Length: 483
Ligand code: NAI
Image (tube, rainbow, N blue to C red; front, side):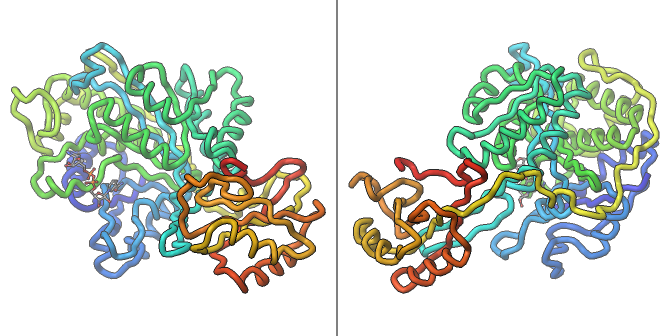
């Protein structure tokens, strides 16, 4: 089985060498195609951090095993890690956090076992990185949550939960505040849940989740979240099981999958051969299972667990009274323990299975087809305007431009209504949202909106605008706070 390997930056080459040494010693049936990705590739002038040859190899083999990669700061370039995940539509980021015997944590000492799988949406949300300065003082980030994107990752989470006989699958969100975006994600969750009646499905607001994770982590099993919230919660979970050195990650797509550790390049310890290779090794073990190499995965994982249980540790964890080993020595200790099993949590020795080819070319884009059939009409527009004036003055000017098609219904500032009612205690910035609706309730045309835009631009700089749509009798926009 051919896989693409990118060693990465910082500690990447050291931990990758350790993990591949373990795979080779175990005769894992893998052939490595090394590809050029990372900071030094940016430095050579490749603006996306990978060479065209690397892209071609990864697209032809379908599996990328990668070390951490540095994103050059302040050069206006995007993270190669995020580019890779998004370009190849690895829509689900799966991170498994388990109590590791031998890695002491508050919970292991209290006898509370942890086995949490976080499934994080990996493409959308604010990670689209679509950001604009609307005025010199106001920055805007667009948050994309889509129905097909949500269904795709949620369906993956349910399938995975079913395979692992999960006790519970939980959707975490902030739909009480972001009613449209997180509301859509939550709606998709319960839609998919109906297809899996055997699984206990529930939801929790993300702040409550964080509190419960640090008090009773053992009550959770599989948790699915949107991108940013998932990113934060998964690092929190890494802390519960001993830190970033123990957090593996699999980026799953229908065509290409990427396996990597959660941690970064650790520049503070790079080049010293002291980094902990466990997270990358656990990611590699997940990759072996993904490729059907069940026996190789079990032998290596049992040897790793046995090694940890026996107190072998790198400098970043473990019993300080036992001298630490370096990265290479840690790998050698794991190799020496092939065939041994830990006293707790030994993995069953399943036979290897033929690899199921999941890798095929994307011939069409099925997500372009929308199932939404409700009648759609434009009933107004939000005009985002730059102004240093007070709401009453702005309202008077806006009303002059409303004409025979529109009425001004509200003005808000940072999402809080300031006209027709508001409070003098609301602090204002130099960007307002003037909301216009159809005067007679009749649907509007795009030309009407452009007409209003042209008219208003005589008085204001319009930073952007958004249509107010109705899908059937459902408002496809939010109300301002206080509206
Ligand atoms: P980091 O994860 O590299 O380091 C945070 C702390 O954890 C440091 O003290 C480091 O020494 C320690 N640490 C991390 N991995 C370790 C390991 N295997 N063994 C022992 N100690 C370990 O996070 P930081 O410093 O925020 O980021 C450094 C660089 O890594 C940045 O350029 C960032 O963009 C990149 N990065 C790349 C990621 C990826 O390739 N997927 C993920 C996160 C960050």
